[in-house]
Length: 439
Ligand code: SF4
Ligand code: SF4
Image 1: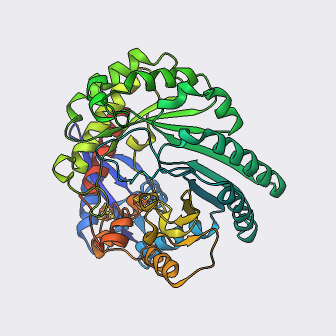
Image 2 (image 1 turned 120 degrees about the vertical axis):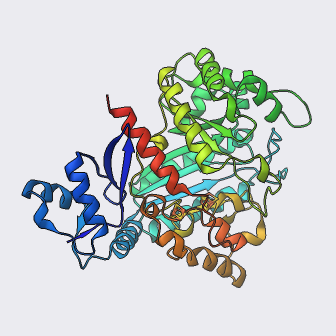
Image 3 (image 1 turned 135 degrees about the vertical axis):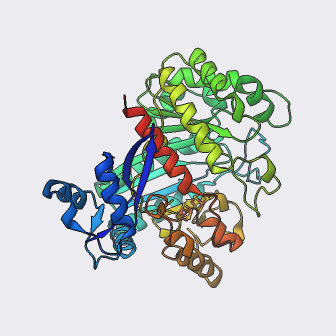
């Protein structure tokens, strides 16, 4: 047997723990065991004789020690491939418009004033049915995206009814979520919309306290802040059977006010039982929203803030995001390079990643057209990075819980490596988890 590459010794309050990122096992260590394991880490050959039988049993079960002949990275890649090949959920992100009623300075989209036509909607339904049948999918999961999707509620209601009928005919499950700025929730019958479209999850963005949010998320062609209207919208639907995720975009400008942000949400949101506020790190990509670099947080700063925020949110009576729990084995960073998820723009063009939406030269297909050379070229770029990883990722203990990071930078900017050290963050998360369960 040998000591697993994925073991880390984590120290909290002078007490030692062993965390194995492959199995997710976390074991408290006494000084004697810790010393024996330290020797195991440094010795080429693992000496089983210094462990008791029940200790060996636990170490094997938790994959802390593994067979000599086992290539752990190959095992991970095999698990990843098998799970991805067996994944039978067709994930579609659909933008009925790229237009938006907000103009946030960090937005990566170009807002074109165009809505999905009846012809695109009809073809989309036929295309979806064909894809579901040809690939033998067992579920359809639709995320409504934009622009601002609530600017097209009639289209969403209509298409949802048609998708539900298709899933009924094929006897498969249907899930749906929406990513919205939430401003128009008060101008529609939001409860009826959620019920008709079977929306399971709604993601709404708030950018900090009322003061900061109103400077950053303003209505198009005005300086009008949107905080109160969004909060009113959230309160109007918080009793629905729909998870409301409040995404708080975080950068250097609002990193210092996470407690105030949480307190304001606590005061303003009446029914919290379905509400999940969480922090999301603002990012920029060279070809989309470059120029924000000096405003962005490093992963480490972000994780520190996310841990603090989750504690405030818990105390305030909210649900907290699973992102701040102990890292688990991940088969993908996101499904984009694997072809199980597609993004559709209002003209029916198909993309792999939602950050590409609306940029026609990045499209990898169309619901109207046969594959052509350009589409094939784009699809090939994504497929290349599905199973190809930078050597530093392969050597990283967090690879199995990170899965190698976002593929878009590799596809679009040929930056084969862009980690700002998620592995440190992984240790921070484990330490936080230990601190939360230890007396
Ligand atoms: S992106 Fe970073 S954390 Fe993820 S596997 Fe690569 S080196 Fe590790
Ligand atoms: S490829 Fe990167 S940018 Fe695109 S959806 Fe995945 S994680 Fe997001």
